[in-house]
View 1 (cartoon, rainbow, N blue to C red):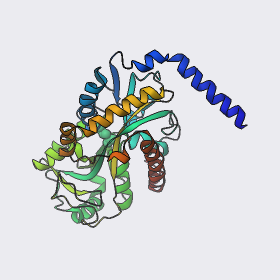
View 2 (cartoon, rainbow, N blue to C red):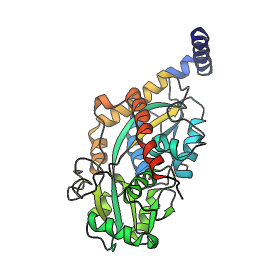
View 3 (tube, helix red, strand yellow):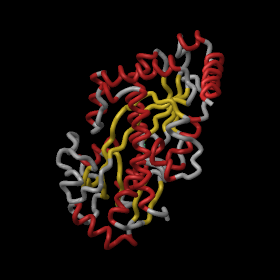
View 4 (tube, rainbow, N blue to C red):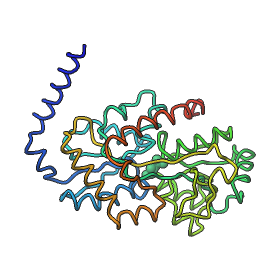
Length: 327
Ligand code: MLT
């Protein structure tokens, strides 16, 4: 059995190498790289992708072109990315939703996040906040809990589609509170935030990088952040524990992935370019100002991301199962 497996492995490697001659690996990249973003432009995943791409382009010497592909909570784009040619010219900015929570949310998911992708590296951790529209009556989280429980039939909750971070983390919130509000899907939390600011929807959960400025400007309310520590970008926002809902622990993450079979030298070049971006003062400043949590050296690269994907699938699957049927 082992000899058959090792022979299959060697054959697979030979095909990969044959399909991607050594010269193409060494002088990679020779043309622009497409970075698939599974949500609408202007949202957290798009913003993080553009900041990382800005610096990676300098290291790789080729443009990184962002392609926003929306739908099905990001799984449409992730399916496209998993099936792309494993040549390093198509990569994806995936996240906790597309590459972990979606496994339990989509029984027939067309890809396996921990099998069909080659990890490049974690870009940023993104704490998740509980948010309300500007004139939402509750002043703090305690009032929020009482209010949404008492008025659930009248409330609309926004999210970026089944499988997204905003959907999954508010699924956790709603299951803690034992409620199922009407949920309104958008192509990303960029457009969902616009609906929250204009009061079309009442509340949502979102990654900090998308909402820092709007909270600081008082355009929306932030009730709590789902992390153990307060976030330096929004120091006045209490942790869920401080605010009385310690069970709401929600930190998302965004990371770069390539299709399985992408040659190792190409993956190493991409991981190296990401590492240099995360070392760059300007790139760090832009990400930190938005409340991102940046991985230290030991948390960067291919192996730590592979381990994170597995542990996050294990983390969110029971949460999703416990929440019961989605509708
Ligand atoms: C986005 O970029 O719109 C978000 O990552 C969507 C989400 O997962 O909530």
